[in-house]
Length: 317
Image (cartoon, rainbow, N blue to C red; front, side, top):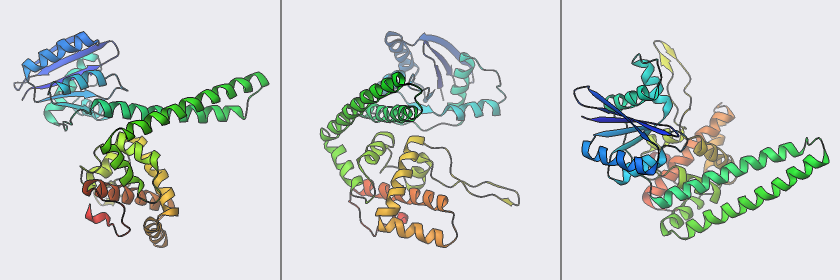
C-alpha cells in the first residue's frame, strides 16, 4: 500500500509518499494552479491507495478538488484527529514536512474514508450558504455595537454598514434560491425537508449544502456526522454519562433551531419531548434527543424520497 500525505499551507504544498516498505519520499510544491497540475501528474504516476489532507479553512479545496477530479482517492480529515495520532505515535515536533509524513502514516494505519469530490454546483451552493451565515454573524455583531455606540458619528457609520449587510444578505439569499430553482434534485430535496412541520427553507439549505450524506448514511453514521450521537464515557467500573460532541458545528446549530421549532409546531416531536421530560430528562438533553430523532427521520425521508408522515419511526431509518 502506498499512501500520500499532503500538508497544505497558503504558499506551499508539502508532499510525503510512503511506500509499503515504510520508505518515505518528500517534496515541496508551490500552492498555485500550475504546480498543483504537476503534483497531480506525479500522483497519477504513483497511483496511491489513499491521499490524506487536513481541512485547513479552505486552502485544501483547490488541490483536493483537482486530485479528486483526476480520479485519485482523496480523504480530507479533521486536523484534531491527525494531531492526536501524531502524539500517540511519539511525534511531538511539528514542521510542514513532519506533518506530511504523519498524514501519510495516518492514511496507512487508519485508512480514513475516501469520499467523492463535490460537484462544481455543490461547491458554489455550499459557499453561498456559508457566506449567508458569515453575513448574519456580522449583522448580529453590528446590531450589538449599535446599542452601545459612544457617539452619533459611530452610530451613523454602524447603521450604514447594517444597511449594506442587509443588501448583501438579500442578494445572497436570492442566489441560494436561484440555485435551488435551477436544480430539479435540489428542488425535490427542499420540498421533502420543508414538508416536516418546524423545518424551513434555511434549515433545508444548510443540510443540503453541508450534510450531503443525508439519505445515504445509516442512522448511526448520520448522527455522528452531525455531532448528535450520544457517546459512552465508561472506564472500568465507572459508568459515565453519555454525551454528544464533535461533528459539523454549523449543521448542529441548525438542527438545534429546527428541533426548538419542532417542539412547538410538530406534534410528533412535541410528544416525544414531553415524554422525555416527564421521565425526568433535563430539558436541554431532551432537546438534543429531539435533534437526533428529527435528523434520523430526515435521513429516512431523503433515502426513501417520501414526504413527512406523522407515523415515521426513527427505528425505520
